Image 1: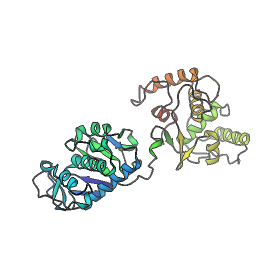
Image 2 (image 1 turned 90 degrees about the vertical axis):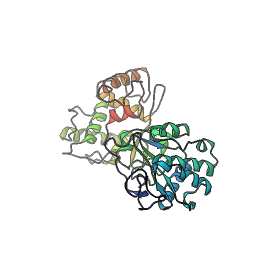
Image 3 (image 1 turned 180 degrees about the vertical axis):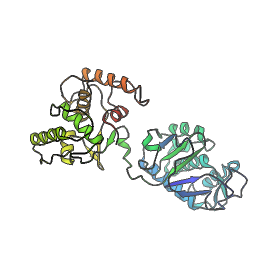
Image 4 (image 1 turned 45 degrees about the horizontal axis):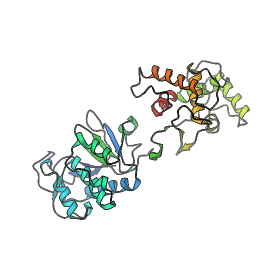
Length: 341
């Protein structure tokens, strides 16, 4: 759900009466993909208390029909907000805002409510082209991964959506797959229970790991055929698991050894010097099966693994602009290496 301030009562950007004359000048609506270019960024404050107030004030503004839209009178919202004790619900005099001044005024008001000078210093005169710079200076983090921009699944209540050319608004509800910000730098992915006859990325993942451990000698082709079934059964026997002949939850848990969060496997970023690390082992396994890494599966990020990561990144960067050749198993590298669902 979004708190959205986008036009006056006539569907225009200026010229209407002060206040929300139609109930849609500033209102709550379902998430939508903005225009032809979509959303460019999500701005997220790391403090959950700040995010709570952003969401709450966005809802209050949408519910108060004294607040309307007019680009030519866009700062009158801030004037009334300051005069009303910084809570949008207490504004009683008709006033106007636009998308960017609305967002920035709310954040500035929160600075006074919480006694946060860096938020108090936010300028209400910014526009969408300067909003990211203003909010980053106030402590916000910029998220640009497609998962945050293409749907509301991963958004947190209090996130700010931004199209730098034209528009901005406030997310006021958590997405169905929203993740705690402490995992922002991690690669989170899911796996399904798959068995004979399946053909999907999860079969490919299983084949890659089993191949690196010398249990699978077939073609890595994403198809769960007899050879894959035999390899899975052999692994289950060796690990003392129930012999289901499927890549089921218990088998995945033993294969990965990774922590989980709300049904996601968590692969944390790592670099040279990390030891006894599950993500390092995952990197060694996938890079070994892809013929980038020839060393043993040691769980230790050494120079040999770093060189393998660099070689993989150099190849991946030719088709994936998110990849940086830095020798680290970072989020974009892990996503490309392990594959997204």
